[in-house]
Image (cartoon, rainbow, N blue to C red; front, side, top):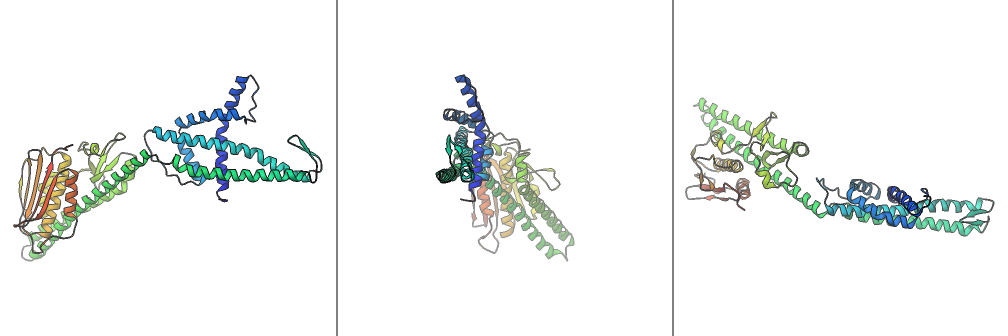
Length: 436
């Protein structure tokens, strides 16, 4: 408490200094109203003090004083005030709380400042009375040297001690009220929680993107490396083809890894300047305040792109890239792909990742040819990936199926993944349009 008292006292003096312009104007108005000369050096009239407090409250409603008061509360009072989140506009709840604090700070600060200006000089005068050597007028009373000065000295010290106690008490009171009145409002806390949830969702989706792309590439690399090792001596041409597939898959995985790490590294600057990176590398530019996540998902596909390694804009993979995905996998895939031009971009991107993960699991755990079916049936996109099971039995470990379920759930679809008599089957239904 002793270490905090000087700073808290300074905060109270700051409140009194901020109150002085209001008091001076109040004294001028009062003098004009009464037809008297105004004394600007002693604005201590109780009526003026009470009259200017509503004006202080109105000022706190409209002037941006919250930042100043938060800094004062944190730096001088030592209060633990959470920094309010930045918002485009001020709510009336925040205005009322700020006005209440501003009025309380200036009112208490004005009283303590006035008492400080009066009591401290008075105490110094009383302490000098015993050594004055002659009668000294104090408050209209002539105080003789000697024993008559003792009550005055004691009274001055008592008033000073009372002032210190009042300053300590009011400083502690303001320090306790600061987090309540200057901290985030319930609406601001809710907005911050929603923003935090969006950030976590974005990072979770980035993790899924990284798992899908890099996991698929590593599976392809493993398959092609094993094939190249088996035919290296007797079929160098096939071995070179496998090595080329390894190079292509590793390069794609490196680009995806660099892309995701770049998004995580540039997330804050992008949010503050050009826009916010949405999950999976989407760039959200100049969104209006209060735009929902659904509105962001529905933005133009050309804007949902991400910088590649060279700093250029690289579009996200969709179902139109299935042929490249199958060719790069190196697996024997039988495709039955219908007309997918009517599939929305958001659904197409997620469906591509689901197929990629299903192919990855088929390469890692299965054997023999993979059968891939993709077609639009009515208002739904149907995907199916089947393959014979390998000799390792049931699949275990990994997060592939979990990631696919998360993507399907976000699009309000259905997924079935599990063993069949012939092997393993992944079946997905994705609605082409969101239902309420």
